[in-house]
Image (cartoon, rainbow, N blue to C red):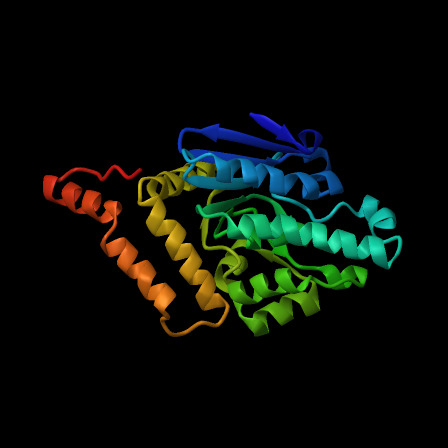
Length: 261
């Protein structure tokens, strides 16, 4: 286990899976400045380790994250300069998760609110417990989500539902979050960890190149690209002529699981 942010973040590697834990359970994992600063470093450590195939992000103590640490607001919102610096800090942290080239799964229990939901939306897949509660309540404080956080929310639930969430500041139980698209799957609390581990292990066994490249192409689609270019055609050809296809076909012929580098 490797600590970051003075122990408020913990990174654990177990074979091909890594788990990044938001570790301030006494504060329901409210995200403080140290965590925003440490998150990109933890993600960079994952990116640098080629043995890691999937990252799981979760919270300690039965909650994902209850939001930003409001006790720091007098400091981070002291003036326009500090507020802008804070916004950029969050942008870098969420961007690091969003652009990581391996799958990132948010394991969500309990509260996943505000800044916590922003972290979850930067993950590729969100899997929740039946006791999860998700919401985006910046309007309760006279704040807004950043453009990046709003974009991810709109991508997850659509523009009308995103506006309804932000205009109401409501908390959504797991079943409603699943219907909206905030959550991709929901399990009983006592089955959540096993379900996430099984999904992560399944992804970890697949082609790292295929998943990373697919993630990049999905990003292009979300940015508005709707037709192939020479670049995206080259990606398709790279796969068709690459070593992973050769291994995948060999495994199919030999009736065995593929072993990708």
